[in-house]
Length: 307
Ligand SMILES: [Zn+2]
Ligand SMILES: [Zn+2]
Image 1 (tube, protein in one colour):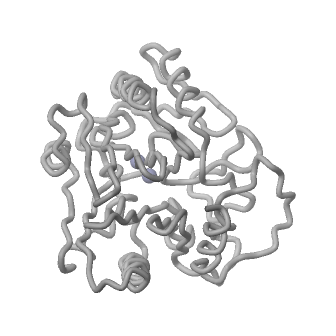
Image 2 (image 1 turned 135 degrees about the vertical axis):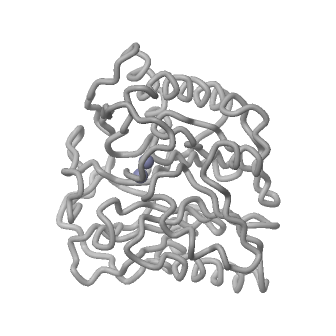
């Protein structure tokens, strides 16, 4: 598996691997090759790497938008799911179509239905939606809890968790409001991945003051769900931490030299849950090695498109 992964990642890296000038210490050795980070003026607008045969990770260059988000494309036998469409500042669909076409060629197929969903409705995760609206055999899921619940079959938002089968690949859609009222995480039962959006990633976990209770309840829900499940890696939607524990890049930094690796250990779920629980009823800025809890002023839904 590991050998395959390294080979497949190498095949898809968009011509931007460099010898690193920082030590490749154990804690910073990533599953992935070096991600584009804005330090090379000639870097491509997107970079695609594979986690496994059926799992593609696409990063948008920080040079196209300072949020530099990560998108996830998961294939099952019957359909594919794209989680997020980027922050704008580029056409994102060519990168998605290239990955889909590669997968189809490898599987000797000519088409597969595509579902486009979102970790949440902030602008940096849905700016490319319009590019997919006229794509054949494609469903773009709406941004409101009612639309998300209706599509995935979430019986009681945010309390229940829905199964969504891509075909021999069951995903679990976990409502996790808090950072944003319509935030979801996705647990991939086959790859043992947790796609955590903006609610847990190596960076600033922004929580509006009036949504702390929702965030706390979401972390409880998530922890309960994960109790008897294996998570190999937590994969979020941004990287804002440097390799130095607890040290982040400035907001809107144009380059991310020596950034933290993308994947987080599942122990960070418990660490974040304990941190926000201990805050009681007031969000405070709290620095952890892999993330920083960051308070925002109260927001009323629908939240503005940012972060
Ligand atoms: Zn967000
Ligand atoms: Zn974001």
